[in-house]
Amino acid sequence: MADPDLLTTNPTLCEPRTVGAEWHAVRVPRGVGLLVLDILGARSGAVIEDGTALYWLLPAGSTEGWTAPGTKALAAGTVLSVPVARCTTGPGSHWRICPGEDRLLTSADALRAAMADVSGLAGEQATPSGSAQ
Image 1 (cartoon, rainbow, N blue to C red):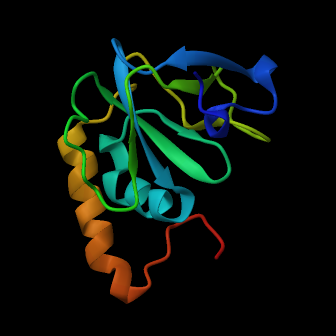
Image 2 (image 1 turned 120 degrees about the vertical axis):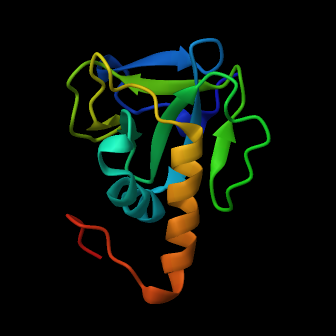
């Protein structure tokens, strides 16, 4: 059954896709996710934003044993609302970073490292670029 928190309020701009065979996904709260995105830079693949969280798509099987605090690896079989091509604004799910021919998946190791870097910055009150806090 689909997690209602992962479905958009505007289904015409999104397609329900099942996490599993093609890719896995990790949900990161928006504030932390923006910092992670700054650290990843060009190493980031496509990123979905829904207003409260960012979702990175990772190679299938790469989230087994995922333990980054404050994040959630979506279980295989979870339905994620994936925006249609070039849907870059909300409300609802939209691409924060659009996928490209070679820019869909993010390395799980790179995402873990960026999360660790953000954890180290937590005491420094870092502010992501391009965001108002």
